[in-house]
Amino acid sequence: MQNNKSKYQKMVEKSSPNTNLFLNCLNAFWSGGLICVIGQFITNSLLNFGCDLEISRTLTSIILIFIGILLTGFGIYDEIGKIAGAGSVVPITGFANSVAAPALEFKKEGFIFGVGAKMFIIAGPVIVYSTLTSVLVGIIYYLSK
Image 1 (tube, helix red, strand yellow):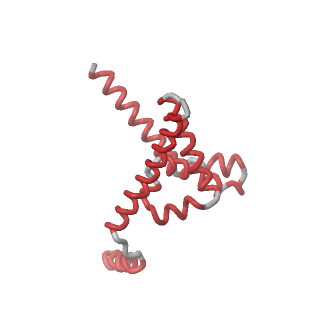
Image 2 (cartoon, rainbow, N blue to C red; image 1 turned 135 degrees about the horizontal axis):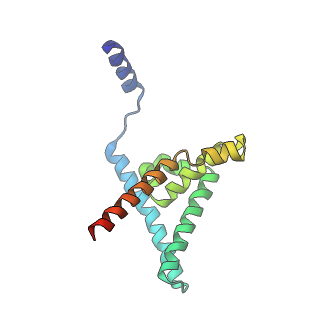
Image 3 (cartoon, rainbow, N blue to C red; image 1 turned 120 degrees about the horizontal axis):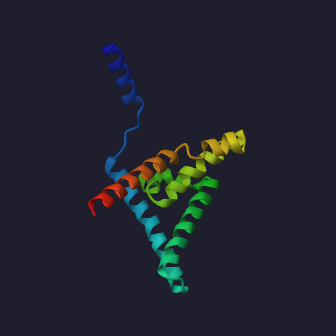
């Protein structure tokens, strides 16, 4: 049994690509930062057009989600993700991509069993655990008062 595990481990190491951790971190940093700079530019532009701060923040989120879904639909976001790595996953555009990509992939199976059932295959656990965490933090905050 142990021999099979070591053979498998050697096969995995042989077939896995060598990655440069520093370069991956650098790409994630600049690309995630660039997405945030674009978001800040949108917010500042909306403020200059006369929107108040709260509306500007809401519209910025909506615009970034739209851009993420649009780039996913055209297949551009996957190419950005190949270069940017985690930098394209973390911001709000990455979340939009994680909802839109499965929906596009499974649309051939129909709207109910394809798009509806598979849309949250990636984003679903994030939604569930973030909701549970927010409830727990709310309870702790309520009890600490």
